[in-house]
Length: 235
Image (cartoon, rainbow, N blue to C red):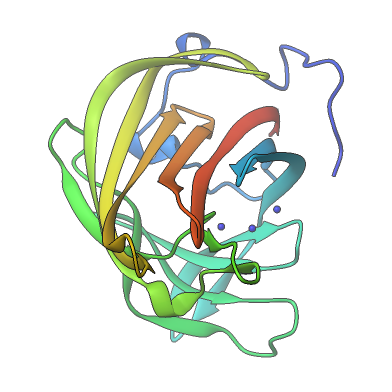
């Protein structure tokens, strides 16, 4: 998901740690209640450069698509994601960018979280490089031609994490792994890049931190890391 209001002071009524909020049901690891809003600090490290920006996302009113109710999550860039909360978990069923007049439905469910919320629960999604890019003889980000399948698994139910919004406990930790093969250059030949993702979900809050690592350092391609950290949460 791509995402203004920096909260200089985080009030207890707006942001609380996981240990202070108990979910009423398991779905609250990814709340879909309308008008909830999240602000993240996004730090990107690639090719020796570090960039920081803010990303905002909020829940809009539900909409009906193909006769089924969908929750709608909107980003600060205007992209709308259409989500279903079913017995098997929460999945994205379509999206619409600011320049599109109609929703593009996903051919297969793009899972956000799968139930049961217990260690070992696993799923997979198609994904794309976040930061891997060509740096020579010109700079270019890798695009959808570099699609790969990432395998996800719930690895912890009681993880702790610190972000600008506070200290969170009893969080769901989801870890993902994928491999991308790139032709680096004539000397290095093909290289396998291990791509890893870690995502922390707090009960009653949702995603509080995401770390995506795409390590690579070469003459033609360079990788790096992107980190999402929650700085503000309103409900």
